[in-house]
Image (cartoon, rainbow, N blue to C red; front, side):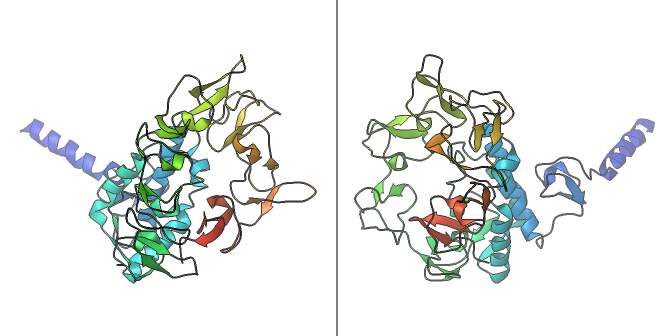
Length: 359
């Protein structure tokens, strides 16, 4: 009997222990009277259906954590290019407006799904389309049918949100296979409008291609020699796209190039070798990898980074006597080169900034 009471006492004490401040990935890591905060630590109070923004942030920030694991860099750097605060504010407003529903019992599964995103789709977060940010999350479900008003593609139950003329947008259907497409509409996921302005299926291994965007996503394929080929972790290469995520096409001591593991910020590097991970470059001053520049730091033409241009993380590279990260993100309608030029709410579509997260 004594042992029984001792056991019950231990169980009671265990249930009453608070884990506030303890690191967590989801609510299962906290007690029933706590929840996992969006900063990744247990906080007082059980999660409720009213905690929309915080619940969305918990899931969205797992994408940055996963990107850091895949691509060898700090999660903070990758978070700075997916703008989770802007996305989750838009999503929360959509839930309140009835354009989405929030299923609290699906949140832990959503968080797990974000932590398991494939390295391939997270490889270049600068190009990660905003409408796929929470793809695979069943906690937030779209409710708007074709023709209805939307704040983002996350609102559309079948199709995409066309906000090209401003907010709010309209849910449009995807163009089916074999039908004509252009810069004003979109082919369904798994197909491409390139190169003949007709929606065609993604190309599988060994098929003919012109660019990597035609090769089937999720298959770790790239276009090389006009064929979709498997990417690799070692061996000769002609560019980073031939290497798997987390690897770079590095210039070797013999002047050849081969796939090697990417180096994370803080690791020693050769400025001429192209060794540093995504969103990082090799500093000539320290011979170490460092994250892309932020406010007030040098940017612009840079011979030692892919594409020869050093972009900014939290604004746009200015033009003047000294080229620095000091220019605000571009507004909707302005010419652009990449999604990050258009700021937290935008995306670069057909070289124009378009709002993708309406307020």
